[in-house]
Image (cartoon, rainbow, N blue to C red; front, side):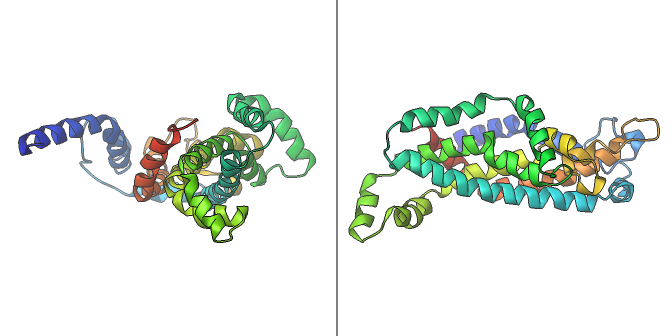
Amino acid sequence: MSRKAKLILYGVLLVCCVPFVFPIWWMATASLKPVNEIFAFSLLPHSPTMDAYRQVFELQPFGRQYLNSCYIAVIVTLGTLVISSLAGYAFARIKFRGAGVVFVIVLAGLLVPNEVTIIPLYRMFDSLGLVNTHWPLILIPMLGAPSVLATFIMRQFFITLPRELEEAGRVDGLGRLGLFWQVSLPLARPAIGAVAIFTFLHSWNLYLEPIVFLSSKDKFTIPQALTQYVDAYGGAMWNVQLAAATMSALPVLIIFVLAQRQFVEGLAQTGLKG
């Protein structure tokens, strides 16, 4: 490709990026504006101020809520990776009667909306004394639809791995668990990266379950906390909400930047074999 063609291509891609980058830019810059400037069209604040970021922590325990979202998302991501990698490997490599039927039944979990199961789940966790704790926010994503999608991604990736690799491992005396841990799992980094991003993002943005199961502000997660920044009349405090939203977007952006190559490779490998 000639240099001129590359410049044209990069220019087109740069223009295509604008609809995706501009909302994030506006959110970050608007959080630095006084309230009366927020909806004025300008790419940069005329009188930048950090008052909104100060109010974020003064109006409620945002630092604690931020930590809640962080550790819940990390636990859910690690737990989902363990469950989905083991289940995906089993469906891809272990042949047993009815494997296809069981896999279809597992995938059917993706068709059940969260709203359908939220009341039975609330009654179950209430009977266990786990309401207003973080356990529902950890267990429901880890054992629900996100874990099903993660299992599907891991299975599709393990299917694409050549069986000759495992046969070589068997010659070296490895058992089934050894083949999974020493041969297949190290090669599954792209799929692991995709699952980690999907799972972390889902847990980080979880909204329905927190408003159902949590009632104490010190136990809130970020999506629930963002709705609490209102004035005495119930109106939105736009600058404060934008400041809190800007800080809430940082972990997701950082994780995506660090794992974007594995994310793209994992998605590319997912649909190669059925």
